[in-house]
Image 1: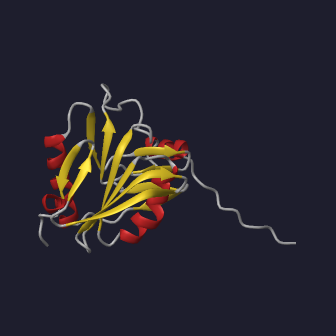
Image 2: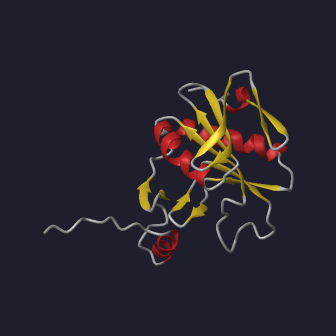
Length: 186
């Protein structure tokens, strides 16, 4: 008689305790996805430049109703604590000092995708949709476009638009030019 092998998944609570007691190094770039710890790839300069550019743009147009968070954790559910490149959060006076923002706090999540496109599209997108994140952007560097997913239902988004250079994208009652975001040349 054989014994089946069962994978033990890590909860967000256990994951955060592991970090608190030093089992996870502070400088490690990690995400908890579907109960498994993933090592993130190093951030290349073009990727970082695009994140900085979006941060500059959002910083100019966002009101005090929102916080622009760069590469910080978002607690989505029991098995998922992701660190999107950019997240736009509901403003909170304490700036989330007592807990990471959760899916109810998130208005928009943005991932800059180059070599990570498949993972961002087919692994992360369903997690964000399943947790009710209203809007998910994939800044697709290879195709020079921005894919915007809206209206989450289960693990999908009902609305998907692809914006090209020259197009403008609505974000929280403001407009952002794709050309502004992708102005950083290789």
